[in-house]
Picture 1 (tube, rainbow, N blue to C red):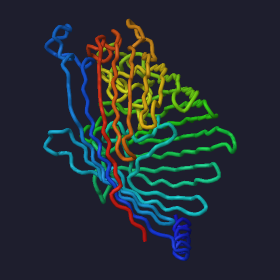
Picture 2: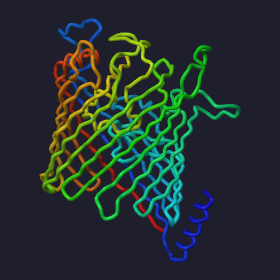
Picture 3: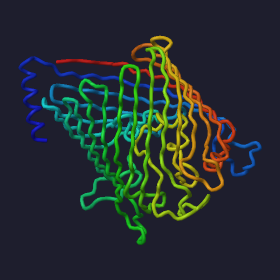
Picture 4: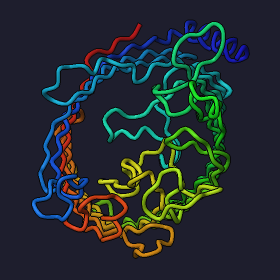
Length: 441
């Protein structure tokens, strides 16, 4: 850190002698998002035979998200802040303004940097670490990030430590905070091969999860550690892109009752994208995320059995809507009783750009559990995602999508919803993001 500070001071002194400028810019990002959906919701307690079922009632709502972005930059230092408010239209406004991002970054001429504050992290294809921006609130982390970038190499170290409040005597039991973890340490390395269209990354993450309950003698508060390690590859010659990833999850996991168990899970994915022209393309992919064969005994319910080791893979902080279908029945919303049967996702899609401002896509997903179920077929259902976006100007765009899914009896049993009928979900997002003010001195 001292080396970075000294290097930054040298850069600023040199910038002053060359007459380089400070830069301040302010902008807004306003997003209006609407949704309508029907089918596939939990059954009514009063009527589970499917007749007049409440899962067929439609729901409609509008969301507004406002962000105020402030950026400052001069040689050797950057600062950024994003103030965010998100609320459903018609609410009383209880969702107060929050700090989505707020960080400073020191950089040196030799490629070293240090960044401190609240940061929206994004790595590789965002499968494990991403902002998950489609969820409206999105993800950001309070971290210290240091690293090096240069000559095709990128190496980052990320450290996080979360508390509920200031405590001068001891640590606190971390619960209901802005993150699901107490501590996090991550190492990430990426290399782009010179003069060859290949990039590869390695990731190691150690996450400290709070287990136990403060008021129970037989389940005292403690921090359990879970490890994630693996890699990502991207090979991209002119008209073809091949992506592959593999991650393993070990250590401890913490369940809904705040008890911990060993975990041993993994996932693998492959994706091929072909662009015969700039106007259209085709993609084919497959994801496998491991899972448990039966519901753990502590949850009760379907196929209950005791597990010494949990096999259900958790994508942690990834942008989940990108990979498993826009409706994402599987990782944004849980299975009944906390069951984690894993997921197989075979996808084929087409996309195109009919005009310079219009882009369209259509994706088909075959969805199945990854584990063997005693009396059920593995197939969960079939889903089709349709999307289109239009860029009116550089700071005004409109996107819309429609998803429908045909679920099976397996989906019906595992999700405890009338999913064998058509589940339909439509949405739109209008984004207005002008730059309000920029000055240099």
